[in-house]
Image (tube, rainbow, N blue to C red; front, side, top):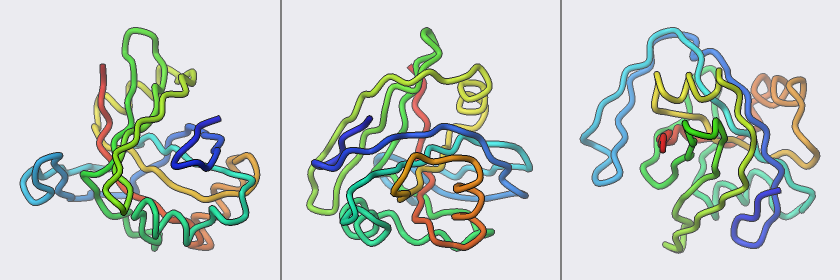
Length: 161
């Protein structure tokens, strides 16, 4: 379980194909500076689920500033969020980010990550953060959410430590 701004989330890690070449710009200092190009590959996706009915997709958009994900277009990039991975312990160490009100948050629920997750994050330093589900996320629910375009998501930096 992860708590973000008072809302408790379960997180699920998986990886998805990018579906083609994606160009995006993302930088902690200035989002217009660093340009990244992803060629057809797989990247890490971190899905957030909560039982709180008020923490749905509108909540993600207003509080976390995660816009609606119009799949198959890639999610929008953000310099406000990053996912942290430990290469030594092979874990997903959590997320850090800035809320709409400017509050900086850091959540550290160590979760086992497979070698594949850490490898993808190492090769392609972007991840997809997405939600919101109201029950624990399964791959079927994730596929349905992507296909029905009901998710909110961002491309965030993958930080390896």
